[in-house]
Image (cartoon, rainbow, N blue to C red; front, side, top):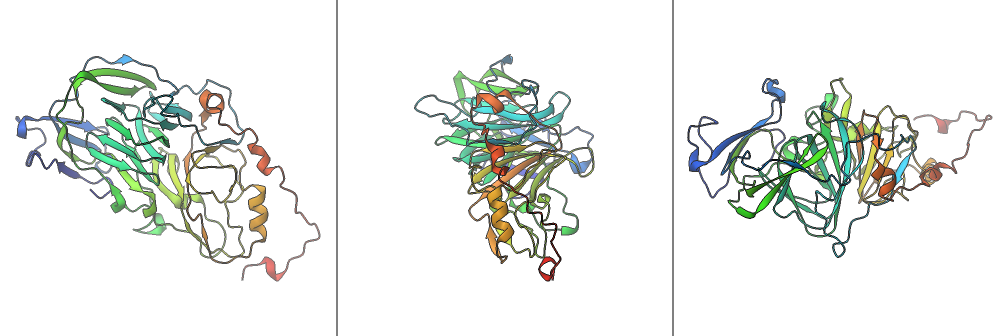
Length: 441
């Protein structure tokens, strides 16, 4: 179904009329179903931010054995494991375990790279990698802490949710909001990135003077249609719950994907990045990357995000008298970048698909020496930029700490990253004089 944040209604075609008419919680639901509300916001939130859905299921989710602690692996919310590191950080592509050596599913393949804040106080962010090679069997995941924005980089993933199924391929993203149960099927060795936010939900950025249309258009977001399975699991179905930064599991004897019908505006959704309507500079100078924002998770400070999801898609570069690649920068925000495919324009070497970089708050960054020299002397004419490429950025107002896994255990940190700027040399000429070539036409 098409739309962002809509009031959707869906029922599995095998059970026509399974949505109650005229009310949410009848004394007896059609087909003998249970009514269950999933709230994504406080009851008293304004209508514009009130999120909830009603699920009509074969058995309610409350029927399960007690939760018990389980191993968290490399998933963590401990931001003081190692000393802070303000350096520019670059990771080579993260290793994917070989299926012939060890079976790793989505949950056991979660690794926290960096983050800040606290799920208990409902204010923060975490960035994870997932690397896996096998599907989740009779197991699902629920994040009680926050929303997952999932960016597959290698291998498509089939996500089964209580609302229905979504196939998500590289160059697509999906959002599984807080509390929604889901299972991930993979078809080969698979890798991707996850942005997790605590306490708020992702929304479309305000467009301001852009007007009514542009960037990620609401109609291009897709929400799954209802699908259910009435399946008993005698050997036990495992629910894994992420709660206060830790993992817990419980058992039940039936599939949680037993929702025959549902309605509401609190749903999982997916989006194809190729549908992004790109804006760019058509005269001179380099616009700020905020023009490439797909989704934002707002803070309580106007204009300041807990996290923005920003992409750098294929586009035209036409600016005159302009150094066209990204400028040199020190930022009051943290910038975590990933690469889905291709070559990022500011660093064509070193920054590879499946890898990442982190430029922390006020840490200098910008084009490497080759990029600067090439683009300082290039003949400026209309050209395609980032053709065949999709880079993205998780930008946050939080000062993010890198985990021990990110700095050490993963063994993917490129400790020579700083050298890409070492050859930058001074071009200062105290005898420079203005000329007609130095001014805009």
